[in-house]
Image 1 (spheres, rainbow, N blue to C red):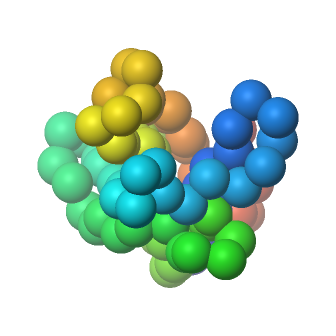
Image 2 (tube, rainbow, N blue to C red):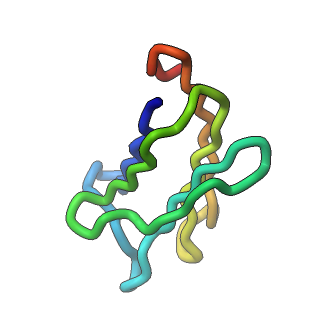
Image 3 (cartoon, rainbow, N blue to C red):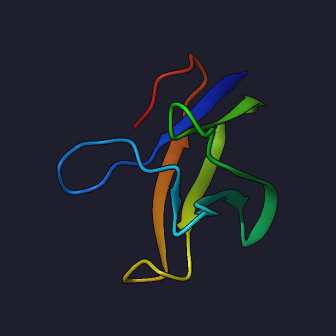
Length: 84
């Protein structure tokens, strides 16, 4: 089992939990199916998805004011918890 931690930052490297009072939403999908979604934490601008089995995942950050409005990032969790 492993965790995926998504960190949302702006161009200056500062944490970005919300835009205009609306939270950035992070989703984790596998094989085209959304497994979980959550807003990033207010203080740290992170989202944690825990206890995932080895396999291929896509992490997607989404907000209507971002350009593009959604940005996918592929991950592969290996047997020993390494991230590739």
